[in-house]
Amino acid sequence: MIKGTIVPIFLPYAGCKRRCVFCDQYAATGLDHLPEIAELEAFYNVWASRGDVGEVAFYGGTITGLSKKRLVEYLSWARNKLGGEGSIRISTRPDEIDKEIVSILKEFGVRHVEIGVQSFSDSVLEAANRGHSGNDAEKAIRLLKSSGFIVGAHLMIGLPKSSLFDELYSAEQLVKLNVDTCRIHPTLVFKGTALHRMVLQGRYTPLSLEEAVERSSAVYSLLKRSGVRVIRIGLFLEASALARLVAGPHHPSLGHMVKSVAFYKVALELARNEDHIEIRYDKRYEPIVFGYKRQNLEKWKKAGIRFSLSPTSDEGILTVNGEDLRWVV
Ligand code: SF4
Image 1 (cartoon, protein in one colour):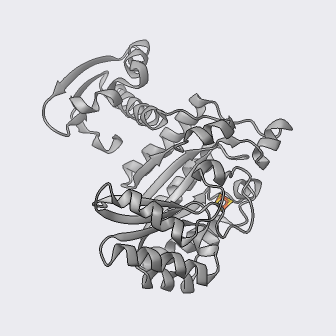
Image 2 (tube, rainbow, N blue to C red):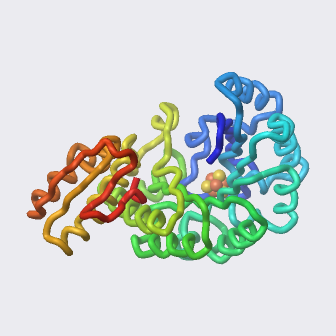
Image 3 (cartoon, protein in one colour):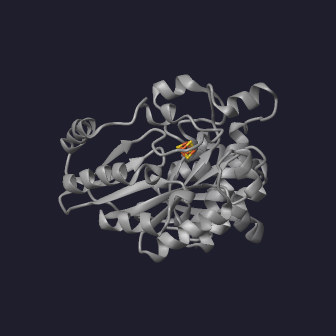
């Protein structure tokens, strides 16, 4: 766990040699150009004024796809700013990781590498114009893990040609590869992207919010039960990004919905075994127990499940019929 402020540096399309069908980095990052070091300085100072900096994180684009000179320029700037304290995180593509890149990342103190895996299904990757295979992702993750990095992955839900089966398979692969963290992103459609054209041509239908929550919660449960830390569910979109969003399952409470549905389902499994459920929970977990707009309570009632709720002041408690379900939150 990082102590201190995380300074997020966004590098829209940096080092990307192709465009993935869903990608609108200008919406995702709020920037329309690759920042120069002077701009990074100003940005860093704003964040540093809020508290001690624990990490500099380079998001967006493919930083390791930049020229080595540019990559080193960004990393050495971050290392100098951190002055031996804190760590550096980057996100990149699976096919822009090799031994030479790994040794540069190590040399400059990168600790956490997030890989845009998106899917392990080659047909899904092809339909998204990713330009790499599932095998490339596996090789990159193995290399990074064996080199001692904290390794994260990004998975997408509802890409063209993707099914729940593909998504669970992809999550299983991540568990087998022992990744440390994962972000789950239901696919959104932004104005002007290839995916937007596919929607207009009737070649792609985005998931409804309900479908996205169902599929994301299945993936979430699989990862969490296996000890993978899920660090984000759904994209955070600022007003400018929302203006470019044309379709897809976006909701500001998506993460809460996904966790609530995961809790509902696992409690239902336990009810089937015992005919009723007794839920003991730390009050702060009440929103997950009750579900979005109390939907869990309504669904258990409709399903004829008898349930009793026992809020407690015991910190961190979340059990259903005595089974510890803290992994859900
Ligand atoms: S590699 Fe990542 S940043 Fe680059 S176009 Fe694809 S999704 Fe966007």
